[in-house]
Image (tube, helix red, strand yellow):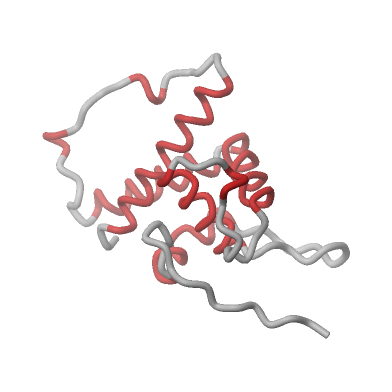
Length: 141
């Protein structure tokens, strides 16, 4: 007998379904025919955003999320290594630019896209890109 997932309370860092639909094609993958059923990617993304926006440890992800903290962390690391977070950022930046939501006169150049020799720094850069992408989503692309 399969358990029904409880609807959890919404956190300020959560994406709406409409916002998630903008990035879903970039992170959704084909389901395998055998093995464990895949985790809910929507909840994994919301878990990532919670950790990145609050600054808490992955282990401190609230228990009412419908994914384990290790699942959110595993997806995060996988997407950092594969460049999926950067693709999300670039796609949302492109859409925001098409709708004239970006003001290039106020753009600044920094070293956040420079090659990071430190793995920890690379993860932080990816996390920052992901949070900026979240801000672009909030601004109603």
